[in-house]
Length: 111
Image (tube, rainbow, N blue to C red):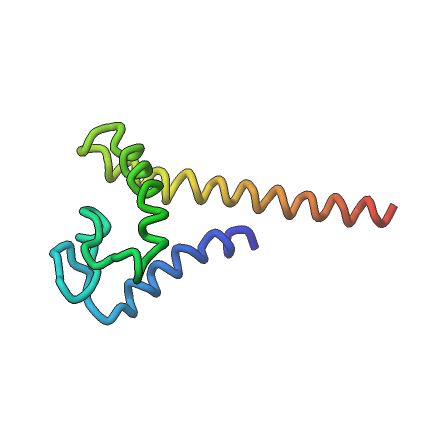
């Protein structure tokens, strides 16, 4: 069950990329957001159509700066290590803890 829960974000990412109406691109496109917006700031966002973008932008910038601590050459490795290694491992550990605590509580209730 824990492994199934850990696979949900991966499967969601595969589904999103597989069903997207446009192929992913790093080039700027004036009609829609692309990966260019993620890397260089979104020119499409305004305070009227995307207030969350402006509220969360400092968090995003801080995350990117943190991932670039090893330099631009190691950015991809840090990104993969954090999002595909550390965070899933943390979620698995927390899920295991919750399931273990639930079983302990059930066992204690029976006594």
